[in-house]
Image (cartoon, rainbow, N blue to C red; front, side, top):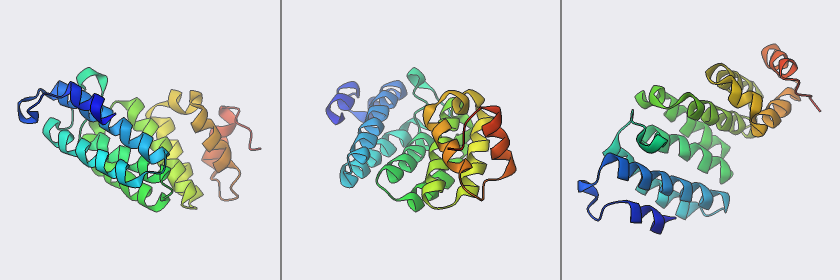
Length: 182
């Protein structure tokens, strides 16, 4: 993935366009997430650090080639990487950093909702079903279709629903979406 990413980037990164750097950075993020999914913490961290360097050059608030690549997107990706590597507490911490960034509001709503679904999963894995429910409800209010149609969101909703601490609002959401608690 790194090789493909740098074939897109110009030889001199300082002279590259934001669009080129966004594509390169997006591929680095995808490589990092694949490495995290494979349990390779070092490769994931290295690729995310490289992506963060490019993201700083691009900045937030752009959507070159529909990538929404920038510092906030890389911070959000660190949430998923930490979760994939089994560190739910670290994933929650990265999530909190992502949503506090000014660039959070510049991410497309679908990206924000998908991130919130990942963050809800992190909360659940950190044994905090109340925060998981609250975060799922944020995803629902951000982009309802992401929760309604994304299988991972529906599975997560069912899992949160099984908690004896599930708030009434999550029970209502599950009923509205016809998500069984079993």
